Length: 255
Image 1: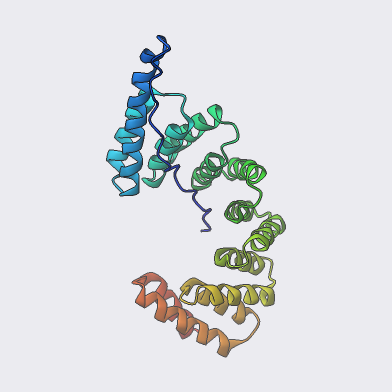
Image 2: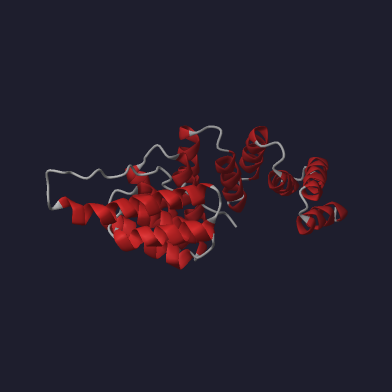
């Protein structure tokens, strides 16, 4: 199944807030704010190191002190996200968006979480918002294209893959996903061309060899299909993907 692309966490550390000695109203506000910054920065460090439980604990502490900080909400959502807790991630991304309505990364990642939950209409809406905020982000076009493909809006999906490739001609996944979509539309020659472009960028992309083999088979190019299946099988085996390897070998045996 096609997957959208995740945005990165907001890992920029926040500067400490200096006390203002000339304003007697600041200390009460400043002490928890400094603590929130400290917890946030600890969380960022833990996130960078892949220590997700520790990162989550620190972001939760920061959020208790600063519940209206969009980056804290976003990063807490991101930790949930990468651990597969998608509903919790959606809740945190939504909180971040309510605070910072132009938070493109939060829309993009919430769209990803909706996609995994098979809520494709919600995903498309979020990806569209992210595109409006970051129109030069090829990965968001790729993600929305994948969501359009899931709801069988193939021509809109292809338009999004086209846009992604116009922004980044080296986006191998955009070529690959466009190839998959063209195969669904029985545009096999165009699909073969897309898989070939994918392999120019990612020469060990086993799935692209396998899918190109299927498309070539549909074009009655049996010998070329066999070569693709063999290459796919070799790569699947090297990558430890036993089921895919067996699938490729079965395809060869049938020919």
